[in-house]
Image (cartoon, rainbow, N blue to C red; front, side):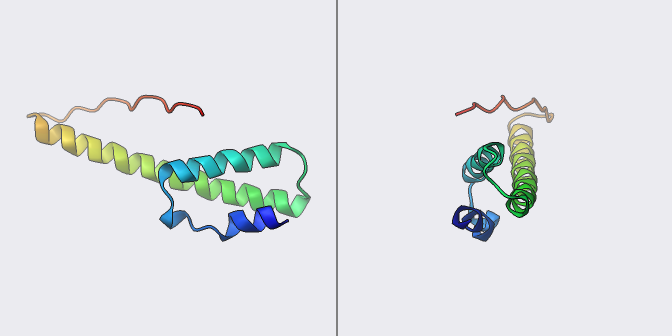
Amino acid sequence: SHFMIQWIAMSEKNKTFEESLTELEELVSAMESGNMGLEEMVAAFEKGQKLVKTCGQRLNEVEKRIEVIKKGSSESATTSPLPPMEQP
């Protein structure tokens, strides 16, 4: 479908974390709707896996940046977990 082609055509590199997460949520909703054929479902799953990986990498990058900031503002580096993300 046109909707699926639009997802596949988008580049993850130029998206913000929030855009990637929103796209992932929309993709999951579309998959759960039961209105996709087998090929579309497989393509959606592959796209979803890429988005999960992209979001995970971005979270890791942010966590590292926070550790560097904390280390620079104190004598010893301390880490603390990031707060859970709010659901829309």
